[in-house]
Image: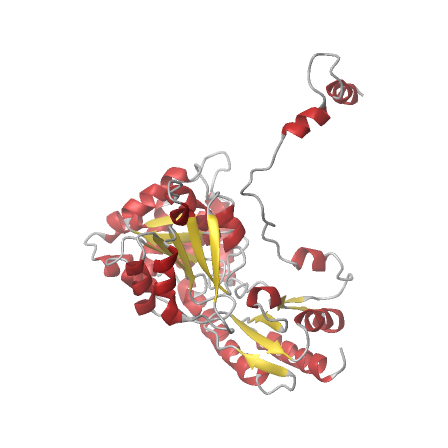
Length: 408
């Protein structure tokens, strides 16, 4: 009752304060928030799945289930961590193992890896957070072209809203066809004068790796920052960190959400010149990575622990299933094109509109994949995630065959 009366008073100016309506009328969204936030359709779908029905979720490129031993060790160690104590705000141990995983010492020639290599690493709540932090750290508002990020399409859909949220403009350069024009990238980057160039390798959703010679040419062609997203790097041949010694404007990002099976905990990283890492650290919030997340990522990435071998086994199984799925998919009537992929996913087009195929798979087989028609600029493209479980592959192949060979 008292709260209601207080709100009623705010709606009048009897006490000298503006009304709630007037105050709300003064609130104006910033001009740069002229975009829709990144959203996935998973939540809407899950809300309508009947009880007792198992939904095969092959839509978000999640990794294999984490090794049981890793989960058990993580939980055992958490029981000894006091909840009232802040975690390491610098995430030093985690940055050490990330540096070892990426091979920072070898790439830049460091004599004392444990002391010096972590200075080449920043961590974030998922690697996508770093695509917001880098523009915040390096924006140049004095020159409009420099205050622009260049993204080659088709590409991961979150780049645009995440970068745009910082006030930076985004230039989306789309190539004709369903693959990236690798040879054209350096020239496009140079002509754009963009202050930030984003490359995705392996590219999501096309699955292709951008070779290091192309990345080197892009770095040389621009005086801005070049960010290479290697979220799926463990599944393919990506390795842009080998260029770090030559190009101080290069940032290579990775994540524990895919190959390391820690998507729920949200841990990503960036490796770059220490001066770049220092700039990123200045705009990061204190304790931006929780203690449990730091611990799980450290355990998963530490090459001295048995879990790294188990992760490698999962990755090898995903690669085998990916290649098997692609081979079998090409033989199914109604499949027009299957893109070669070095990620844990396969993109393909069919003779039917993507939305219809997506809906039929969900309604008749309870399999959710991703409609990527808008991202690809092609009305019949879909993407399916690949797991380390042959049963997932078999179920999807049977379902897509039935959907494409029967009237939708």
